[in-house]
Length: 458
Image (cartoon, rainbow, N blue to C red; front, side):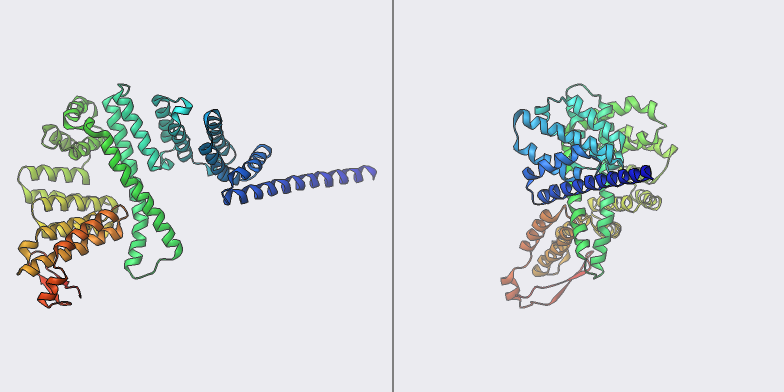
């Protein structure tokens, strides 16, 4: 009996010890969290370090707020102290991966660690080779969650720097360019699809909830970031990928890769993008790709070849075939836009507008088709009005179309607003409307435009 009582007391004391420890951990977490939320990171540091050392697997908040706390320490510190905090943040992410692996995506946190080392490469004495190897390992470990726009650019930028230093070969540079560009396009497609649903909801007259508005801002911010790095990536690549460099490389590698559909596709895309379509190699690559794996892409490029041969009607057949073969909505929208641009360049404005509008149906958050339509309206002003006033009224239509671009596309808000303002400056002004006495009247614009515009009230 005495033994049983002793065991019971022991169990009670052990349980009390566990409860006390848990309460202590909870109390420390609460103190840390409150300080961190108030951005009093200096005060949050002590409880953060205590809980992290005592029970690192207690709660994910240790790592969520710990990152902010150490970021603040890094920003304020200098010299050896700064380096110590940088290394401690790297250690914190390693601990997070140990204790909360399922909540620590390898690509995302690997990229964060590499970016931190890149940002402080001087303090850490890191070479371009070391940093590139870090990003490359993170990307290969989990490309799905390696999505940060800044890190994607840094990853590619390091490749270019190593290429310029003679430490990477041209094929490695172009392959990495394709990897990163395809990744960016995949993310743009993902966020565009999500944003499109909210735009369609608004267009249907349904008000967005506060949650919808928050998501909309989130999607728009990422699309703007990806748009910025896309331009930066192309600028960084620059003349390293001009036809003088591409043609010899692809010619040399063609035989070894002629049955590799991915290589052929990338070669076609790069040559098209860089304006190398006049070279015989482009024809050779397109025909080879079409022979082993015909798809929407090859049909489009065959259409380009037909266009170059002056066979416009045949070219359009292949463009239509490309559209019929493409099943992905985002990619199909890009095809419609490419075809429309080709038609626009030939002056086939009415057909081009139809294709631009189809592109907008599939991807309404891309405002570039709106700007293209606006540009066609503006360039037709002199030929589509039946009087001086009505000719200038076409610029109202152009401005309205340009404004649509800024409304739906976060990457074009500024440029679309400027373009619309330029068009409105060319349209009739208040004095013109007063002289004409037609405020509020509807003007029918003829020729290929076939639309009406209302004269503003003054």
